[in-house]
Image (cartoon, rainbow, N blue to C red; front, top):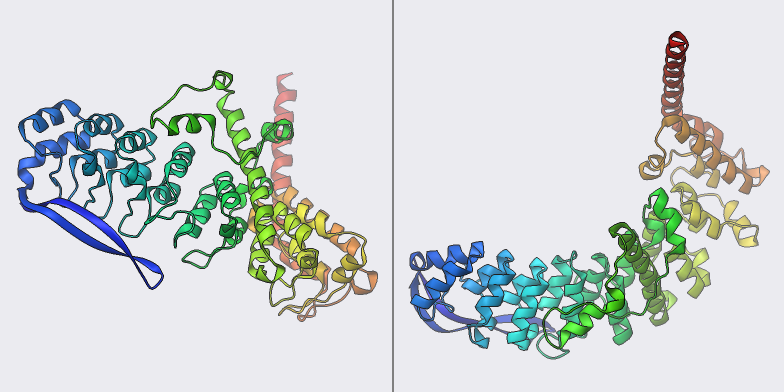
Length: 475
């Protein structure tokens, strides 16, 4: 099969406020893919010796496009994650070869970024630092691709962020895809890198991406970035408060030290001892939680209350992200009266229905506001009071946090009684639009759970009696 071979570059021209790719081709020659099959196999397997023999006997084959998608040997090796192969091949090719785009519109650095290969990225950028400004067919830099696809390699994202210059055509921090970068970093679990960017470029705190999402939207949806949205084991919950983290909004020492030379460096002597993997994961999680809260505070400094949409509070409240609600209320106290939906759900009713205990503690109290909200009749289809919300069966995630049906039923009863104390006696027997009191609704909603709890208790009791009988017989 014959295929054109030569250099393809991508010129990103502004058109109507967005980047439009214009493909420019030159030095086109015809090649037979079958002739380059040995090189393709060697590159895809990372076999440098076989590739070297082919390159030595076939001049200019480093530039040859050896696949149907116009990939060179360097593209193939970077795409397959063979970093040693990439390092050796980079040493024998001119710097301009590294800028060649394949038929998809990627350079070798783009593939290294997508694959999360820090070693390959350092080798490529050591040869040609201009690669950070090369855009793919969608106008994305290697930095944005790494943030999107290489969430397992935070060090690579930090590295590319530091070596990518704020220049045309990429403009990673102010260009049309700058908001995408911040939002993708948050969604990938890197709020500390987003925090670094927002402090450097405060305008990014309120920018919207191509899907009309702001960093505040993404934070509200990604509860794993906050402690209240994370599930810790028993030992993790015990250790977590004693872990010390510093939110310095900067890259790790290893990244700072390797940027200038584009190569790996020895760790700082003070960092050579590493705690067990479990402790490091917990430490990183706590750092992520603290950075997410600090990022939220930085965003609030750039916001006005009018810019906070009700959907954001509704999503955060449904996810039970206490830190999110607490921080927003700290900056904008009037949000306590914010209507979260057409049902006139303020924060307190929302916390009750979705069984978010920590959020309930924040908004519940003996203040006039809490008492007024507690006595508010719901303007939903079902009507009733906040006690009717507590009478509903808990959402599955909250219900399944306790294993056995009997304990689930006990927890539901406890929650109902706690909310009942908030409601004035005058409203306790109020009926909803179906003519049901809160207690009647509770009985109906929990009928099946009560039956399963009763069965579980009987089965457990019978099992205990059987074990006791066997022990008595053995004695």
